Amino acid sequence: MKDKKAEFLTEVELEFMTLLWQLEQGSVRDVLAKMSPTRNLAYTSAATILRILEQKGFVTSTKQGKTFIYKPLLEKDAYQSRSLKKLSENLFDNTPSILVARLVDDSDMTEDALEEIRALIEKRLKNDTS
Image (cartoon, rainbow, N blue to C red; front, side, top):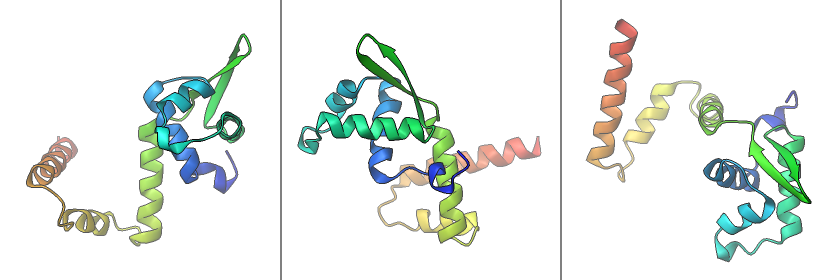
């Protein structure tokens, strides 16, 4: 994946990858079945998106009879890390503390969520000093 664009998924590609991460592997029909019924995407369109994901190196496929089974090559947490790093660089001046400050200043953040974040930070600090 040398092409810069190939490092990141489009919105539609991310939708498909999210479904494949949930399924672990699946055919075009499996992915369509997992999709919201209101999405109303044609089989051929879904097949094209999965082929593009394969060309970009995000998924691999194996043929079982006449059906292709697609499997993610990229793990979800690896993509989350890559995307968050890019977001931090581009939108938060490569300053993670600004990103976290914006997140915790969100008025919709529950006290439980804040406590969970605090516990994660404390665990990380403890592990770094050990």
